[in-house]
Length: 315
Image 1 (cartoon, rainbow, N blue to C red):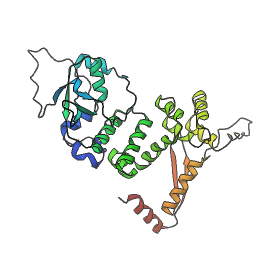
Image 2 (cartoon, rainbow, N blue to C red; image 1 turned 180 degrees about the horizontal axis):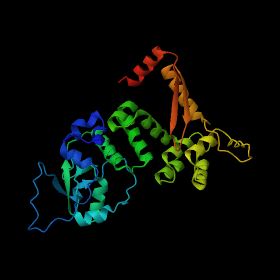
Image 3 (spheres, rainbow, N blue to C red; image 1 turned 120 degrees about the horizontal axis):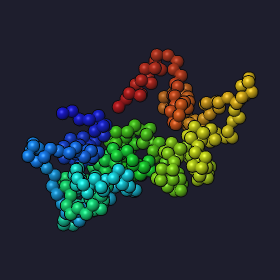
Image 4 (cartoon, rainbow, N blue to C red; image 1 turned 90 degrees about the vertical axis):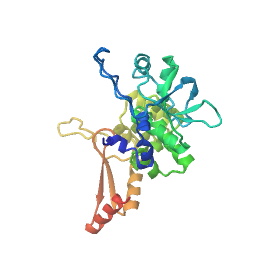
């Protein structure tokens, strides 16, 4: 059976680990509960799993030191599901040497917490011997697959990979199945004041809004205004460029829509970086909603075009 596109996008660095069916099952999103089965006399006997997960007393497990998630919420009724069906998905753990009967959770801490609240005594586990780098990468991958990991927690995980394991942004991007600009933009959130980062953690601000606040001399005050006035990323871009430009009047005297194209200092800095990297005139223009942009490169001849293609496709 072919691997899912999402699993392939997790990067080559963990392909060996994720190729193991047990580990892949431990980090994959939880399947929905099975539909009601026929009566026992009619139900077919399930096929035995090739490698059934082990079980461990729930007290043997402890939270992982590389867990990127700082907020654990039961938004999807996980505790009720565990009470009714048990844990449908094993928890990935590694043994802690020098501490008998103690295992560190690599992936599945939310399930472990839910199992505690559901008063389970034992939980299914997959036990693997992993080094710290693999432990952090797998913890990040599992949480990124859940899609509800906050942008700040995501950024802190990337920063940890870079600081503790000397990984470059390119290496982090390859392992996590993300683009290098996504890694760079996410890391920029860590430059925000703590008050603003907390607002992102509480989902009061989006990652796009928070990044735009970096262009303001007082991000905290602007963040409070953003929440109060429900300012969009585009409106923040315009405000960051200076006073909001007066909307031009049409011939009928009515105010027309604001003119697109106002650029912040961050946008201009990105243009300069592109120009330095490619040796071409570059222009970034905001279009549509959110952060959708159009990149324009001025190319003189086919020789320049070949050079751009070579640099963009170089591995």
